[in-house]
Length: 497
Image 1 (cartoon, rainbow, N blue to C red):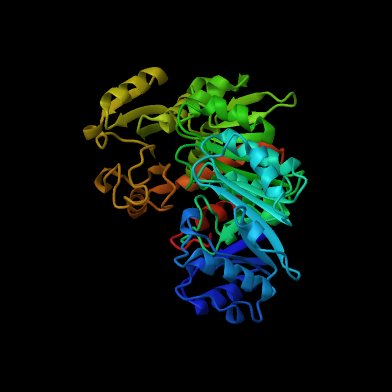
Image 2 (cartoon, rainbow, N blue to C red):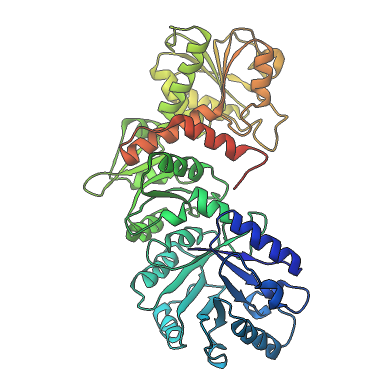
């Protein structure tokens, strides 16, 4: 069950948010009474409450906002019990001072905001000795193994245990704790109001990660990268799982540079079935895999790791296939029935990892490729590697091309007024493909349409590379239309999650 935390300074706003959450489907709410600017009035907070409640009052030493005395705080917790609240949260060092009364259930909690200690079992055992109905044990994750150790504790706990890790590394555990038997996890009212490090919003927990559907049989997938918190991959993969009724969940796994081997080793216990891979781990993922596809080997980087039947990892690169499909889509729109890339003159802007993948695909399709990059040496090196031409950045508008492909970040949000190819360089009849997908219509694509060019947005490549991953992960054809819809929703200025 998801418990949504409400922290507001006014009683009126607590009551209004409680009702709003119930209308959105919340089944349990935590009232953080330490946030109130006045002494809590339980006759107002609990009267006609639309859902069961947990009353919590955190001290400053526990990262709370309580400003009164400890005696007043304990008296308030006793008052909440007398008022008949369904649950009361008691820190382990005060649980013995507040006896049971009525039907109120006791959540005995312990938080460590610095680390996940080595003696988890010992601390948990002491919590179990405090007469709890439910134990709540929350720590800060500093390594992937912290998450695994916490979930292992939840999995084998004899007393019902809420257990997860805080911080960006710990986001995964806030959802996966349900797979291993945690009776409750916590979410915040909205994404703008995080009440704990790494806390997800109620809507994200329900609609992106489908927490209520997670069980012991749920398969786990994710994307490895750093930074990773704003990745849209979880949104589109989880949308596809939901659309096809697949019991699986996909997470953003933050993996700091040079820690990929340790991370994959730690996450073996989670039995992850497949990973998308992004910066800075694409080269390392290729090296760690037991086998690799020709595309990944030729590009020298992998954006996907998927499990074989023997449990080994195969590395591949789906950018290659997705980019070619996107370019052919543009050619088909331009000249129906003539989507062949062979013999086309292509200007490719950029010389990074995406450019390498697309350049390889274009070269293998017998296109006449010219590379231009702001760093001329990188353009020259990639051109020599692919056996094609290169041109200086300042001269990129002097040639005649059938296709222009932008592989640079120019024009990406928030720098939406930038373009890698000024409007006067564009010629009618070109196919212009921009790998930037946020915004969907970049300045380059706006200018290209004004010059009567055929355009293909980066959304097409992003969705298609994810679709190939999805098919490798699940064996099912990807719901492309739903995935496009999801990414457009994700980059919208008004995001529901």
